[in-house]
Image 1 (spheres, one colour):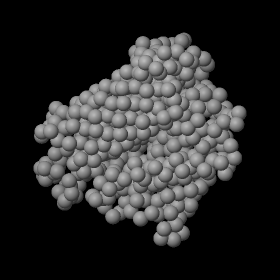
Image 2 (cartoon, rainbow, N blue to C red):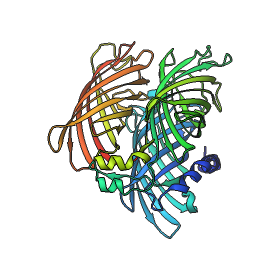
Image 3 (cartoon, rainbow, N blue to C red):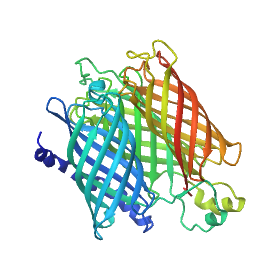
Image 4 (cartoon, rainbow, N blue to C red):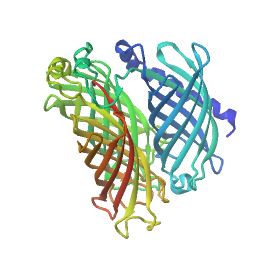
Length: 506
């Protein structure tokens, strides 16, 4: 496909402003005039061997570290072509240079890992590098549009090396965060606006596949059981945005993974009982599931009950389908989670008077090395260690206890396309002014890359020693164990992470 034929396909992104309009309208009514973060969507098409192309959507969230530089986390997902399930995770850094009040130049680098359908032949060990340069134009309060050229490479024995045009849409928003962990009670008590609500939940989804759905090999597609995490941000008392990541955890199709993002509404039925409805789009595939190019659509409605002021349980029913593949299913989902900000507006002065610590986020760039602990832990390259790169987000309930979500993908060790998504809890305890101990337990789904995870359900435990370089920046070394519940995968795990503490009156 030529460069100019690719450009004609970029209009696929044109529908995104319509999709995000209700979300941004809700955001704009409450936000501070000084935006310090952004949600960004990108569309481009990569050249693959054999005159094949793959349409990719990039989604990310970034935080401004200065007037000219921002960093964030993101994912790339196949949505067009024949490679549904090709997904990568990573981090990016972006340099912004204004030219006029509306126009600007932008360049950046994404470092990530992953793969999917096509496995080792496409992604090699899994390491992904992407650089880009673009011209951006502000479109009023909506944010900015961008157009430019990017270069993508999988340098660790992968076969993808592609230059292509892209278009992007960036939606700015205000997130009330400060770097560091210290709280100032006076600052809390002076806050006039109620905190914005956020929630993190573990979600289990049972997919009842249509009888007409076949696998990629032509056989009958079995039902799927997925396990994952869901994050919601509420813009007001009704509207919310959501991001969920799920993977197959039983019933075969090991290696299937999906990432969905969307909008929804929540309406009260009583003080602690709500009805919810949302729609989402995203990418998914793997495990022999026929999602075509990978683009998915999901719609669901459900009920949510708060068990305490912050902990909740929910149930929902939905419909999930692929746009270009044969995959189609109905679903029943159960979730259990924690919502921050609920009730804090009425308790804010009491919190300040007591001097309690408010919640904060810790975002970690994580490298983990898996070492063989069973001779059958992999189906190939059994004597090679597996290097993984990803992101872990810790939401602290108080000064010590936190909920955690982790997404990792292999970048070295001939395990390209291996990915894992885990959710759990941990505790951080200071032992000196700067050193601290960290213990956490996680469980979730994993698959791909020839790793023998059985049905896909895995657990991991870690013990860490950390050091606060500044109140905002920390490093931590961890040692742990990871095993499949019903597969031969067993490994000892060493990790190293760089964390940034967002001190936020969420």
